Amino acid sequence: MSSFMTTWSSLQTCQYNMNQPQTGSCCRKNLDPLSMNDFWLEVENIKQMQGSDGEESSSSEPSSPEDGEAEADWLQDTGLSPLIGDQSPTEDNVIILSTLTRTQTAAVQRRLDSYSQSLRKRSKQPARDVRDVFNRVSKTNIVVEANGTDERNGTEHTNGFPENIVQPLSSLRRGSEGSNVYNMDVAYSEQAELGHNENCKNTWQPESLPHFQIQKGRLGVTRVSDLSSLDMKQVPALALIELTALCDVLELDLKRNKPPKRRHTESRLFGVSLTALLEQDRKLITNTQVPLLLQAILNCLEKNGLEIQGILRICGSHARMKSLQQRLERNFYAGLFSWDEVNPHDAAGLLKLFLRELPAPLLTAEYLPAFTAVQKITDLKQRLQALNLLILVLPEANRSTLKALLEFLRKVASYEKRNLMSLWNIATIMAPNLFLYRGSGGKSQEGGEKHQAEGVAGLVMAMVHYQDLLWTVPTFLLSQVRKLNESSSKRFNERRLLNFLRKMNIDKERPEKNHTEPCKQVKIRASMFVKDSLAIQLNEGTQAADVLKKFQEHVNQRNWQMVSTMGLIKCNSSFVSSNLELYEVGGNIGEHCLDPDTYLLDLYNANPNAEWVIKPRPPSTPTV
Image 1: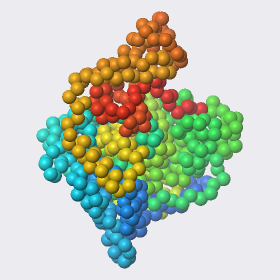
Image 2: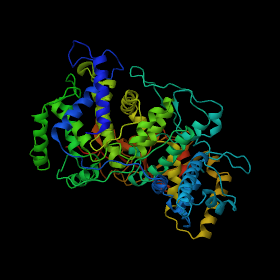
Image 3: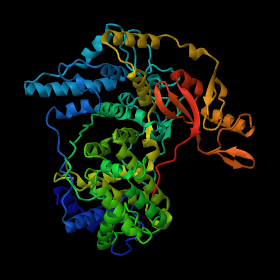
Image 4: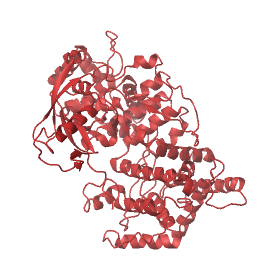
């Protein structure tokens, strides 16, 4: 048993004896909204269960990287590893660097400097200065800091997109943003550098979590599910650079562990990596994003457990859970396991067991220290910004599985009056199962165990409460994705690359003709339903919702020859659909489901080569 678990368990005994009332049911609602009783009881339960089964972890302990190794891994994960040593930077490196803000560029330089210092100690070839890469193109006068200022003429630039799309930093300097307005147009690190933290509170208050309103720009809000998988593959590297830049500005040490080595396991369900589980599951359901076993457990709990008092808190029978685990291993994929006979408390125990038995934690071994460190950020808005970026750097399987879990926990909290499980109760119970996983090793966290416990419980509570915000792709990151996509299909030699970057800079400075056009006519395809395209006259006020409304009107007026009515519901002789969406396809994006509040003339200016398509939103991951 790890010393980490032993340390927390011994402290649990003290905390439990101090706070435990002498009478009352274990199902009662805690009177103290910040009581940690549930946390320490859960730690003790985990200790007893792991001590009784005597099984070894299916993965080795995570380890800290050596000097220089962390920086090399960071550069690898951000796509900038060719900057190390005497390799010639590729055009992709130059393109990535050309999209970065000033604070992001400084973060890259710090990692290169740190890497060079570690190599000098070992007398090896140092990394290049990132400014050397920029010097290749600065002679052509193309170096402009995204969301910053061109040093030659003091002109504001916004990643090469129209100024009315990405809010310039000047508005933040004027202090026009309210304390609870969440700005996603300007890089978080740039906002932090301006000291824009008017909402300084240093604790999560369960009974009064502040409401943050996303400040919608002209291009609306983009959720993770709105982007194609190809576009989302660009996001983690950019989010990691921005997360690092934000932590640098906040003087927060961003540590990442090396991923643990996985050991072979005979299990097919518990103790198996998410990647391996999904590989098995997709043989049955090709597009599933969440392990089928977890979906089945959550479905069982939603059907039978949401209204049960003390659900998640009360432990199921260890003997029954062991038997259920064995039966699931034998019968789950054969379709011979019945969930109707499973006690809800046992199902809750299986849920927590599934999370703990993962070879690496759901939040990943690499980023678990970063999630833990977020609690040190005193400003709540900046904590959420860091959490937002951490969610975006997670592998897709982890991010989708975490979202399914948080959606379920939010449902549990919505039944608080019946199940007596407040959001804080839920967070304190689930936190040990997410942060104390089998294989977490024998290293204790750095002091202040009680403070650490409250901090990780607060993080779980925040992830449940703010999950819609956290699964949003900030506008400034989407702008960088667009720039990367614009150049991904172009292969240049060095001279052509310099010419391309020079032209890109000239285009930034040249007034765009589209900006002065009062209107623009475009054609919208809806080939799933009709043969003809829908001609739309755009003006500055036309939004995506207006196009969908007009399409609905044309369908019901029989103005078109219908190809298919699949996905449309006939109601009172009219066709309606609740899941039709307008998509932006091609150009500098793969596929993007548009916010109904998107202003389409601005979108046309940002991506004039895209097609716009009306089609149903794909159903969410099928459930078992």
